Length: 274
Image (cartoon, rainbow, N blue to C red; front, side, top):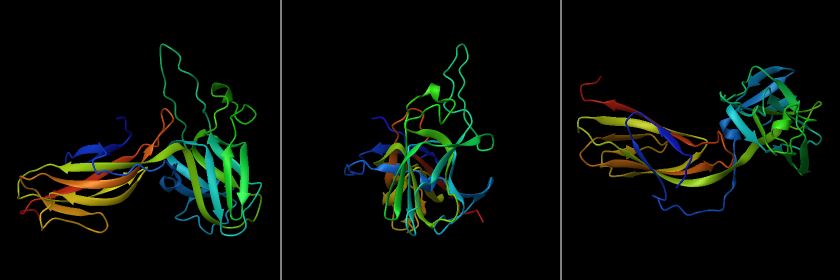
C-alpha cells in the first residue's frame, strides 16, 4: 500500500498505518490547505500575519505557506453579501520551472522574499455569501513561464491573496484546495517497552491532517490520556500503544507538499530526576 504519511519522534515509536483501526472508507472530499497556512493581510506591499481573518476588511487578504502548494481553487464566505470581481493573485518567480538538463539536475524552489505577484485568470462564481475562484488553464498571457507547463489548472506557489479595489464585506472564512483529497488513516504508535523506573509524558501533533481521536492500548490503570491529547505512561515489559484516528491527505500530483506528518513529542523522566 502506498501512503504519504510520515512520522518523527524521540522515543523510537513504530508506526503501523492503514486499516489497523478498522476505519470505514468514506467518499473522498477535497482537503482544505488553509489551516496549515499563515493568515495574512497586506496594506500596499506591507505584509502582516494575523490570528484570524474573520471580520477582516483589509485591502488584500490571503494565505502564506511554508512550502509550495499546488492551488487550484479558493473559496470565500463573507460575513455580508459576497464581493464580486475580486482580483486573485499568486506569488511568482520561477514556476513553472525549467525542465532538467543533463548532466546536472536541479530541484528549484521559489522563496517568499524574491518574486512578484501575478494576477491569475480565474473563473469566479458567487452565490449568496460565498464565492469560488477556480484557476483557469495556465497560459503565457498570465505567466511568462507557462510554456513549461501549458494548460495546467493549478498554480504552484507559496502565497495567494484576494485583492479588493476598496471597501468590502468582512470575510467569514477562507479555504484553499489543491488536487489532494482527505484520506482516513488508522495509525498505531507502538511505544517501546523498558524499565519500569521510566515514566514517559508527551503529546503528538499533526501537520496537513486532523486527529479525530486517540485511544490507548495496553495502558495500565495509572497510565492515562488527557482530553487535550497529552499522555502519560510508565514503561513496563508489556508493549503499549497510542491508536490514532486521523484524516490525512491523498496527494494526486507528483512532488506535492500536501504530505501528512505525525510528530511524537515525548520526554522520559526517572525517579531521581527533579
